[in-house]
Each structure stands twice: as structure tokens, then as C-alpha cells.
Image (cartoon, rainbow, N blue to C red; front, side, top):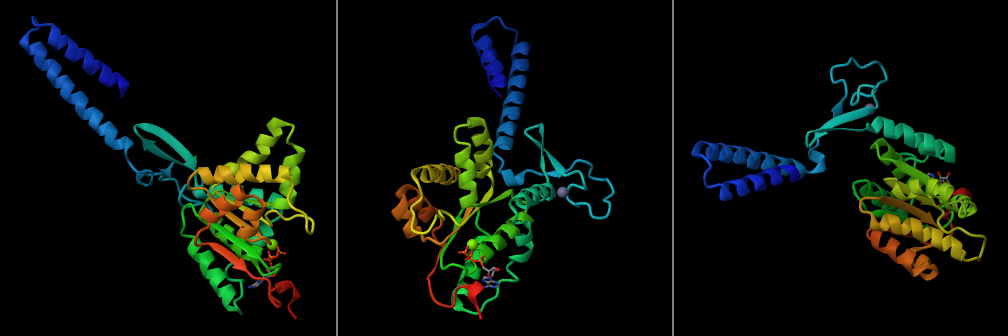
Length: 291
Ligand SMILES: Nc1ncnc2c1ncn2[C@@H]1O[C@H](COP(=O)(O)OP(=O)(O)OP(=O)(O)O)[C@@H](O)[C@H]1O
Ligand SMILES: [Mg+2]
Ligand SMILES: [Zn+2]
């Protein structure tokens, strides 16, 4: 782009300062200039295209699909597109899903994805109905956060896992962490920068992150300063970078979180507006203790 502009400027200069220039030569320059201006315009229009207008397609669009192969990428697991005349490639949603499942298997939640679904979430009380409706509505959101806090055993992890499962089906890159386990791992590697970055980076950048049992500590204890610092690093990165979806379940409410650390709590409060679910502690709400 700059090169074209530069050539045009040089031509203008030539035209202005070379009065002996022959008429036909001048006309040629005008023609070239016109052509270049047209090219510039076209390029600009292409650069301004919305990302959703990009036509991703299979690498081999006419390849026969074998049984069980993805019909979008035709089993190649990658898609290609031409953007501004350059060839780009990206992972197909089927590949994203496979990667997500592998990661979930490592954290032991893969089975839960099969079990904790919207279908298996039973409704016997109004608050469950409300929670499920909110969760279903949340699936259509692009960069909001989902929070559910309160009563032990009321289905917080169940409903959040159901959301996660749906995002996996949409081909989003997702990560699941159980806060108490993850924070131990992160703190143990704090002194080893390379390892620490390797552990924390996926939590910062994944399209969808589910933090289960956020700030769970031994009874009555407040999270340590080190826990708060690490939590802030994750929450703030995801808060600042648009389009990252975060799902949080906790025995604590957002108000409790604000009381523990205002910077963390208020960020969650803002992002989870409309999806801040509090399940009050009431007898009979612990599913595990049902008779
Ligand atoms: N509405 C529901 N329908 C079907 N099963 C449910 C429902 N609510 C909870 N359960 C089941 O009860 C068990 C406990 O639920 P879950 O682990 O989601 O609770 P939680 O709120 O995350 O608890 P904790 O605070 O201990 O983490 C799970 O096996 C879950 O599938
Ligand atoms: Mg739970
Ligand atoms: Zn595919």
C-alpha cells in the first residue's frame, strides 16, 4: 500500500517539475495513476471487510467425505481463506472441539460434560428454572461473563458445565479449571517464569474459561495475597481483552468477592451484569442431600 502511494507521489513530482515532458508521456502517467488509485480503493474496501464476511472453505472442496469425517473441512481439520490477496488458514471447529476435549480429559471434567447437560438439569423449583433460562440466554452472548454463587450442592457446577458443553459444540476453545487445584500449580511455578507463563497463558487467552469454585479456601480463611494477585492477573486480562467469555461458580457471591478484593469483584460485577446469579442458602437446596 505504501509503495503505491510513494510511486504516485514520485509521478506527481515528475509531472510538476518536468515541463518538457511530452504530452503522450503525461497521458500515460495519468492513466497509470488512475489505475493505481482504483487499486488503492479496492484494497481499502477489502481491508475494511468485517471478519464474518471472510469465506473460510475446505482445503480440498471436492474431496469425498469418509464416514465420520467433518463435512466442513472434509477431514482436513483446517480451513483456508484469501484475505487481502493472502492465503490464511485456521483450525476447523471440529479440530477445536477435539483439542478442547483433550484438555478437559486432563482436568477430569470430560465425563461431566456428558453428564451435566441442560437436558439432565431437572427443574423442581422456580430458582432452578430461572437459573437454566439465564444459562440458555447466555449462550447467545458474545463477550459477557456468567456468574453463579451461593448454596453448596445446588447445581452450580452442573449448569456451568452445561454451558461449557454447548460452547464446545460451537467450536469455541474452552478451558476448565478447579480454582483450588490450579492456584496451587500456578503458585508452585511462580519462580520459574517460563513454566509459569506456559501454565497461565492458556487461561488468559482461551475463548471460554470456566473457573469452578472460585476463591474456595479452607473454612473461614481468606484467600492469600498471592492468590489474589494471581486471580487478578487472570480476571484483568480477560476483562481488558474483548470477546473473552468467563464462567465462574463459587460459594461466594459477587458482593463477597468485592469485599475480598474490590478490583477483582468489581470487574466480575461489571462483566456479569444480567448474568449474576445468587442462590441463597436454604434448606433443601443441596441436591446431594435430597431424600
Ligand atoms: N437441578 C438438578 N438436576 C439434576 N441434577 C442436579 C441438579 N442440581 C444439582 N444436581 C446434581 O447434584 C450434584 C451436585 O451438583 P453440583 O456439583 O453442580 O453443585 P454445586 O452447586 O457446584 O456444589 P458445590 O458448591 O459443592 O460445588 C451433581 O451430581 C449434580 O448433577
Ligand atoms: Mg461445584
Ligand atoms: Zn472440520
